Picture 1 (tube, one colour):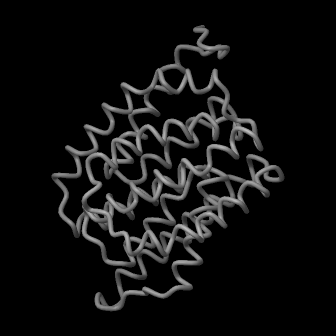
Picture 2 (cartoon, rainbow, N blue to C red):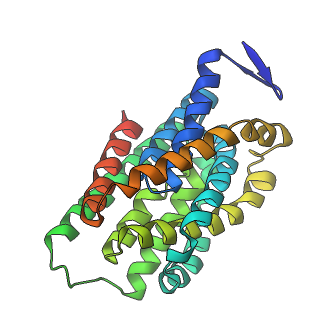
Length: 250
C-alpha cells in the first residue's frame, strides 16, 4: 500500500494510474480511442464521479502536449461552429451529472459510442464529396461533445464523428481536436471544483505525479501516428472507437 496526498493506493492501483497517464498522453497526439479506454480504468480504481475529477487535469496536461505539436494544423472555421454548442452541452452535463449513477453512465456512454461508430462507418460508404457541413450538424454534435466530456470525459467518439465527417486529413484532425479539448476542458474546471467538488488540492498533486508518463505517452503517440497514412488513420479511429465502446460497456 502506498499513501500519496491522502490517497491510499495498492501497487496495482499505482501502476494502473501511471498506465492511464501514458494512454491519455497517446490519445492527445493521435492514438484515438485509448483515452476512452483510460476512463473506465480510472473509474474502476477510484469510482465513477471521483475519477472524472482526477481525469480532467490529466487530460489538460496532455492537451498541452497535443496543441504544442499540432497547433498549426487546426481548422478554426470548424472550431468556431462547435464551441458555443459545446458550452451548452457542458452546462447540461453539469446539471444532469448529479442524477446519473455509474451503471446508467456506462450504458449511456456505450450507446453513444456505438451509435457514433455506426454513423462513421456509414459515412465511409456514401459519396466522398458529400460533407454534412450544416449548422444543425455542428449544433447536435457540439452539444453531444460538451455533454459527454462533462459527464464522463468521453467526447472523443463524438468529435471523431464530426471531424471524420468533414473529411479532415490526419494532422488537421488531430490539431483541431487538440485545440477543441484544451479549450473545453479548461471551461469545465470551475464546475468540477465548485459544483461537483471532484477536484481538490490533493487530487491535483496526485495528477502531477503522472506528468512524466503523460509526456512519454505523447511522445509514443507522435511516433505511432507518423507511420499511419491518412486513409488508414480513418479506419484506425473507427477500430479504436469500437474497442473503447466494448471496454466501456463490458
